[in-house]
Image 1 (cartoon, rainbow, N blue to C red):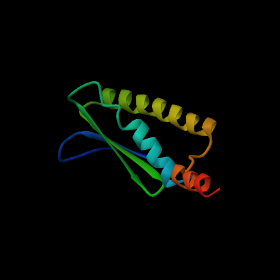
Image 2 (cartoon, one colour):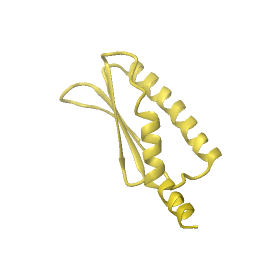
Image 3 (cartoon, rainbow, N blue to C red):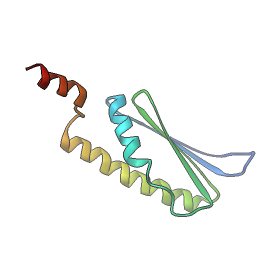
Image 4 (cartoon, rainbow, N blue to C red):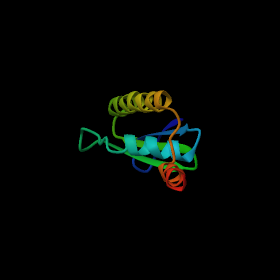
Length: 104
């Protein structure tokens, strides 16, 4: 986790890496969180990506206040996604499950 100011653009940048038990769970989190676009059209951007079992998020904002609100909102949503995955257990490989039922 790091916050810095980009000297070329003078924008504030914030980086967050969230480790997950597996790449499948990191991808589920990405797909759950990616549809949430920022409510403002200007002033902030957010990019999400998965590398291995790590979800990486990068923000770039004009103002600290906008950055703080966006990061806070994202963390609230991330917490909900993680809690939901914990309640429902680890993801099931539906392709493998389908093969098991067909061969019995």
